[in-house]
Length: 219
Image (cartoon, rainbow, N blue to C red; front, side, top):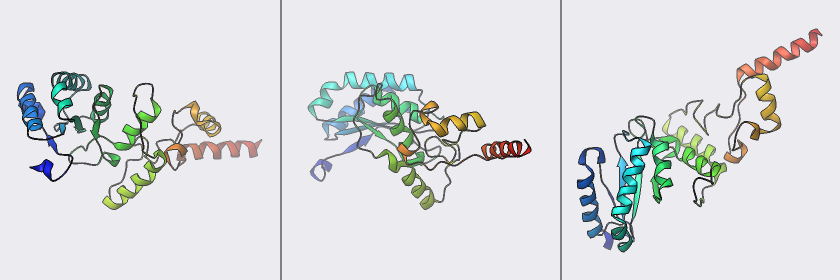
């Protein structure tokens, strides 16, 4: 019935950690026969490890290949971050051919959150040699959107949060700071400007500069 109302009907099989492989496979087949064309495998507990999650998705893809193809359906994942593995599990899914990964700006979500959109996108942009995928996402809008969502939700992004954190591209120490000022590629693959990131200078680096000025005056 739902397919008569919209083109995309998604069924989530959760929590997969409790239902077991055979029940999960049978549930997916029932959903496909009922008209679902997106089957989501969410790591609801944030418990899965990247290698086992990868193997699970490979097994499901191989075993259900004919059914998925016949129904023009796809597998999807939503990885929770309770143990800090959401990004690794999402990348593992893309690596084995999963077409849809559910994520959120800054990884916002219930409990420990889900996979961070900006971190996922940055990985795909930085390592095209590992992921043969095309993106239409504007990288230079990531920081601005992150700050907007943070403001609307009144939740601060941690300063050292990758990609969009206030200190994500802040290199302490005089030597390293001097090098990245000349060429960011010396220490990072993606430049702050390519991600729309506003760079903040650390207090330690400011102190180093002040000490250098004092030493120069003293000389």
